[in-house]
Image (cartoon, rainbow, N blue to C red; front, side):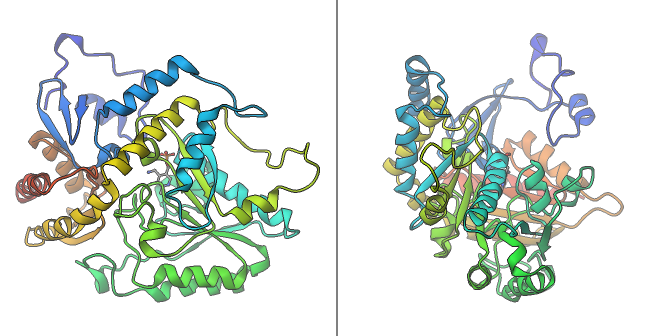
Length: 441
Ligand code: PMP
């Protein structure tokens, strides 16, 4: 694929691209020009089916008129106003609207600017909560191997993706549960894997090691996303919930990917019927249209902090863009689309078709695992001898040339289409991918 810019090619040198092999990219750039519905479009006019909802975020599909209109109106009404010791109606309105789809009792909302900020905010709320209750010695966090919780220092500390941690220093006091990925026992599982619920019991070992009285919270993605779509083993999250209750640890679900319908319910919490204490979100919150995140808290957690003189600032934490009016306008318009079009229920209805279609690729060479849940899926390829990640990268490039956007992390191809996807598009997606995978050596 040429970059398609013709004579208008911008100078690519200044933009230091995130999570990108910059030199490789700039030698062979891949640039998208437009997007509408399920499709991107390149500068040459080639349509590219969006198999990843951008970065797991454009759940209602691209170019939604209602969001554009709401943002435009808000920019001209009140473009920006602070929410420190000051307010504007739309932030309150959006928080209130979010409580209508929140898991039971999680009706207090702290706004942030991204998923990473949501994670750091939730960790800080957990510390502040314990301190307010006279348990200020609870300062440790338990994350999980292969976990991804964004790139703040808090997030990389509880996160367990080695490359994201090792160049940097991490917070003291973070420890990790084992990951649940088990190719031997669970390869080609449909939905939740049968084996591995007992891995949640490792929390008992960490509690014995550190002392429950020193641990503030456990944070997990209900379905690990960035590690390559790892649905939890059957019964795993239930065990984690009951162990957290037993030891007085807060349970944080990082729902930055699973939130807003990805599994066919508003949040994974409802999908699994397990209510965490804190929940981090972003991405689908505004349909990816503007940067924003939100932390949902159980009311008791919020209320535990509302103590002391009324003139006291209860939580010394917040961002210039917490509750940004324009992002709130985008978010409200997004929620209206989700509700009006019944997109969470539609995702649930598409999930069995998705499952059958993705597992239809099991016969292809190099495919060593296929995983799926809701409208998420991953195809794991065997690494090429001496070149881990090469098959994944080749798949990404060839798929793009064939008109399909996939995400490749190492040799895992991850998929998460917009929730508006229809059966014909599911069929098209997997037939394009079949062609690409069949062409790999
Ligand atoms: N948590 C999870 C589970 C995520 O998947 C991500 C982003 N993929 C983040 C946190 C970080 O979000 P952001 O990139 O918006 O900071």
